[in-house]
Length: 226
Image (cartoon, rainbow, N blue to C red):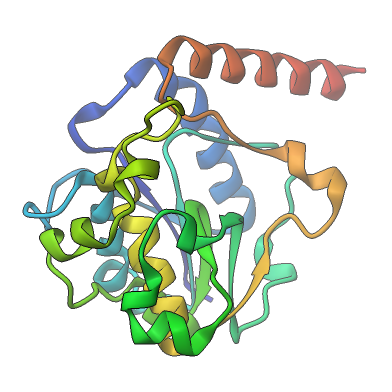
């Protein structure tokens, strides 16, 4: 079985954090037989940077399993291979929300027909060869995606965690494909105890991200040695 983990790291973004997170990603790949595809160059230069995750569509088209793992993810050494629970007919992800919170989905017939109102956070997404359409670049221009964004939400305002429509363009696009193709979905942490084993540090506050990564790794090391 050909299995790939795709990691986007363009322009060597935040190397101090990557030095902490990547060893956990590499260890997971080696333990469970994944090859790593490091995405380091832009192929969608007209779109926001996060849209480069859609390189998975071409890079992973010969694989039976594709995982998109953000460069700011920590994976516990004992986190199981998601293939052991992934249904071939489903896409799996770590987090989700209501896509209508950030985008005017009522303007897109696919979302209205689908009716599930699922927004996929793309920090850790798993697809099979049956659900690879999730990564297909969508037929909307950057301007069309921007016009669908609810700026009062995506531009932040009183919520500093919201970082502009472009930061969520990839989440809109994969959610668009989920609705368009009617894909089934599931979670990747199927037991509550697994949640702390897959940690997304975020990068909005770099000092906080580094603190989360260092604290998490220290906790894992303590548990491993106890």
